[in-house]
Length: 283
Image (cartoon, rainbow, N blue to C red; front, side, top):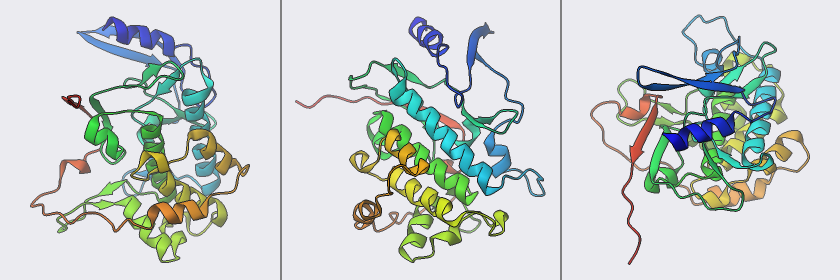
């Protein structure tokens, strides 16, 4: 507990326009509560996945502005602060909107700090189903690249207006949004995945960039994912997107493994999970 409080105090020094300010903490009935700056427009999740008839909507320019803001905030956490901050729970519901509808990355309850140049070693799986990188699920190893994976899923979610995992009625297996986007990209119809609520009123090049970058960030192998500095460069147009690299790293992917399920899996719930792993070293 002392170590966690020390990290909370350290994270209170984070200062970036796309990071929600952590004001402090308090204890209540045995719980440790984090206190953040108030964000009047709530979470991005409400705008993307509100109830039917929800009149809250975001046009494409605002979505792309939010995407770029979250990317800038995550770059700050990974590379531009005094320590490395691994967020470990990047998702739309943890992106909060201020009074001017700027996206700010919030909820640092699972975040961990590391010194630059060190290799973080964890055996604790935390995060939200659908956003958890394969190596994190298998070995509990969190890193900046597991954050990049989650950011890639977030990119697809914002651009498509769909959750990362969907369970349709009468379907045994869940549908992964990344698989749908990848298939449409291979078929040459990537724009078909853009949120239909935009009614074709969006910047085609920006939307396709967001979708392709989402695929690249959410690759299965960590070594094939870009770092957040590269991500920001792609989004800002300061570096050309590596189309050939995306083709190469996705060429051997044959889609999800077939599964048999009699009921919807727990992955259709989007609450944060926490699992301890026992990992033994090789002999």
